[in-house]
Image (cartoon, rainbow, N blue to C red; front, side, top):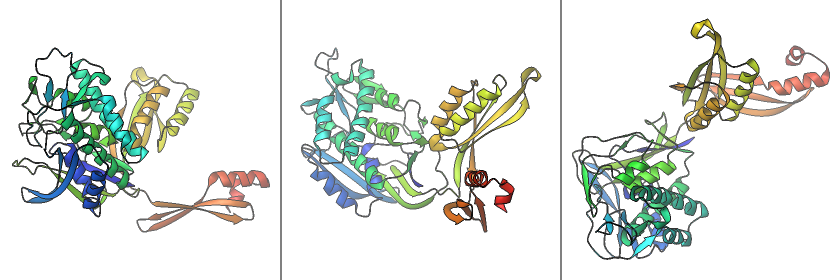
Length: 409
């Protein structure tokens, strides 16, 4: 399984994530040329080598009209009660903004720009969804509907370039799953046109809701709304790096210098089934019939579980019951949890993260005197095992009117 792991120890921003992903490509400069050829209005991207705390990586600089501005700049609608209209969010990773007068774009205008670009439909869909996450968060913060939120023109073009660029890179890298670490947000306050706001900024905090975060020991804004939205949309899970064979490492550099290297790293590798991280989900049940439990087991399997089984046990007040054990891959955990809660009476589930070792499996069909039989071969760790598929054996035994034992012999 091709796995992409994003290390967000220094937070996340759109340009840092894009630079890290670009380094996973054979020719990052070719990607920058393609990004510039898209025709995002008055916008130009450039990639350069950068060093932080002795570590080298890449920095992508986005300029709009020749100026580098803040990553995200939002403006309230014209009827806002605020005396200052522009909402400039200052990001710890980027240079401070400039007080210029610009036009502003509504959410629909942004979608029109994205849909006009010469990219695949998948990239357009993903980019629109990521921007939608930002628009919904900003709308909730300002008490507006998303369609009534207006974005500062330069910040809009900058963010579109970051978001579309990241969507293009994810499509090209094509990982089977994306895992991100806990996200560092920073702490303290950040000054904007409306006043002084807490860190993480309100929109960022909403986007990160439900995602594991921590402030760390650096004062300032470490995670931007764009970085947060990209992680929320693309990451299948948030956890430590899984067991994997790393093949490539990309390092996207932030602008500022800290005691800790200001970078976001992307690890691309394979997480083979011979060494797999799985969730073991467990709950106790004493008020379901055997029929109900059988039905629930089938539905849980259908949701993506690898194994579902029960263990007899005595519950509270010496009631006979069962312990339901379910094993699933991390990527399928949400669907499996939903199935357990939906089809059983439990109101609580415990989880253990386990490392699973399995043999590599291969299946082929062979012709026998009883008909075609599928043979499964498992190999690895110095051993090989072969077994005929039960369903094929059972069908052949019924057809020939013999026992299963006879056909196996």
